[in-house]
Image (spheres, rainbow, N blue to C red):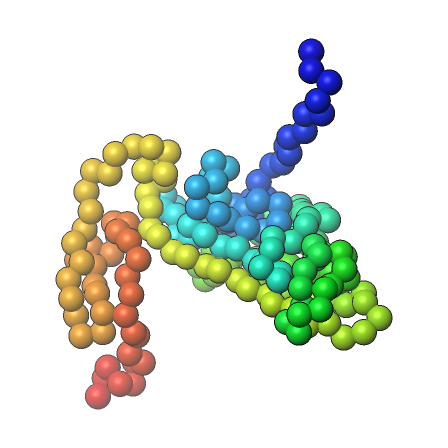
Length: 185
């Protein structure tokens, strides 16, 4: 038997759900593509977000506590790692606390985040906080390894791309959205 210390992180995903809308994340609130934990934003049988990541100073924040005890709301208590401030000076470990409150509302098909930061340092601090969100529509069976059976085609329209059948998952659709009052004119 080896004398080497063996450590592995054993964590459960944080899952919030309201009706057919649910969001699964890692304990730090991230939903990273490629994770085998089945994380992301799902509605019925389709995943809409494949990546949702919050970084502080370019680094993933250490987790102090995570809970989804309320069912439709998750609370993630995070802190900072040793990072470099925007002025180039170092910021010590646990100089501030970050609370991420995340809520899903199935009736409105809404995911809402509220971020609260508390400075524990004795002076003002400046750092980069980045939120990365990436959407890629994927059927839940495809995410589990099944071969896709059909894709609905994209067709060009004046404001970007349109789906011929918006009920089937396809891929990222980009373009600008025209306000209703401009479309009516």
